[in-house]
Picture: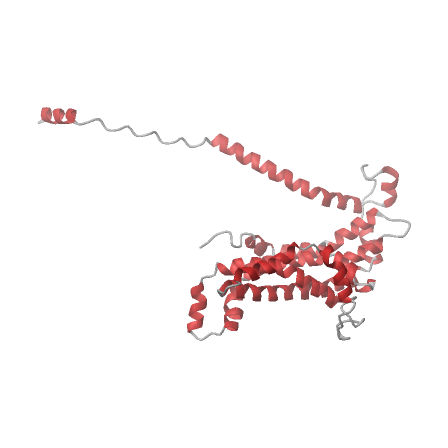
Length: 312
């Protein structure tokens, strides 16, 4: 029995040799790549933080100290006197309020109008669907400096009711600045929101339609709540962009008391003398609201960075 088995086994053909499994990268090389990646990210972070830290360092030094020893010297005293002076001298509380009156309505109106357009181009199929989306997106490619001259003349002629503008026109009014912000920011928001709404299954809208829900109810009660992550990310970006704007308020507003906080920094510069330490302190104070907005919406903002990056 054993001899027969041995003979039979000897008659079997040779089995083909299989390729050896690929070797996994060594833990040492993987660890070196991880260290190199972290070193690169740390270097980039430090590069971005250097201007902010330098502004903070300069703002805490007195002008006499930097004038005598230079800005690259070791400080002979640090304090927050420049912050107090900048806050009182420029009238920042008043200009903070002006920025709030411009930023909040502009962000809300931008998200409302952009979401309505995005809902229309993403949930309905028609011939000029893509062309309409491209038209809104192309508006962001036009530099503001190109349209400022005709826009300035237009603002001088468009009337407004007295409760919206003291001058009676779009020019020199907060409503006029809000309008141009909404017009310029809608294109980007339409592009982002339309891509996000395309990821929402159409079966949800079809089920609501079968249940008798009209279009406006689908928009307000179904689609908008599902777009909350996209709204949070866009609200963060738009708030920072509109709050930091200087160009539109400088050109389209004549009265200095109506301008936002970015224009208030100009009040810290004298006609014959400028204190860079004081301006650095004022610039850091103007950054506080945007930093607070980012910290509050940080989780939603980071989650919104991957909007439309993957399909489910």
